Image (cartoon, rainbow, N blue to C red; front, side, top):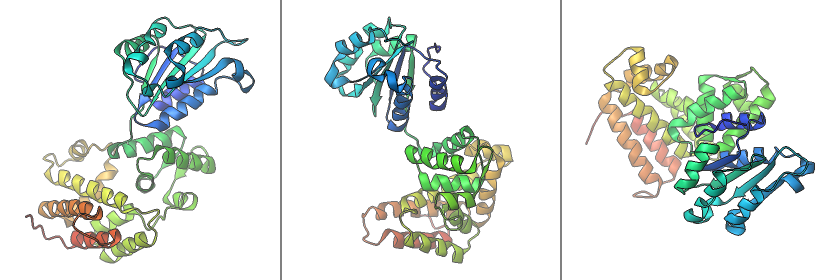
Length: 345
């Protein structure tokens, strides 16, 4: 049996399930539904297909009721080591009703694996939470934030036994965003095609996923950093003609992150590589090269002006104060960035 814990990551918990290092109770809750759905599948697969009629129970909390759940959990498996009981939609019942499950969780049947799923919400009921902390595993499925996209992609690349080039990493971030289902599917596809130990390159992404290695947000920012207007506007035009794979929301997010980090770079007192990495939260010095180049072409006042322009674009692209096409607005924004004089109103 697994040691009760409340701090397992998704990959670690999935490894434990596959290795049959199991706790008697699992509480899966949180806003991100993808992780919870995948873990529920793993628990279902613990029971062989031919035993599922006898040893796998899927109950829906609003329909079944807490007493029914506890009665099923106290049964014994039929000609097997354990039975699996999955309670779905637990977030849909009142907290005081869900909390009654603590009566079972405080003294769980050792031959039952109970999985309580609160998909898209935080579980409530302090007695239940305390009992699960003592006798089982609590997994909180958190939404992926813009800040955590790159670490999440890097972790998954490592889990799939792949390596990745910095430009390819940025391409995946811009293309996938915070869509976890898409992230796992696309990287799973690359792992299957390329094989263990392979290097994920921009060419591999272009060939197997369909993102252009020459016309993407990474190349756009690189061109902006060196003030290459011809290349910059060529990329913007490509985005206009291929909007499905190049939504302006991702482009503007990349631009905002770039110039926000550049402002931090300008104001960092410790000008050593380690000082910059600490200020920007980077783990590798290669990422600093982008800001070294940009800082030579955009001073502090220009950077502040550009950040203001990006915020104004965000408002206008939502139809507030402008009826222009979003890609026309993007073209205007790029022109503003390339010609910024450092005028701060």
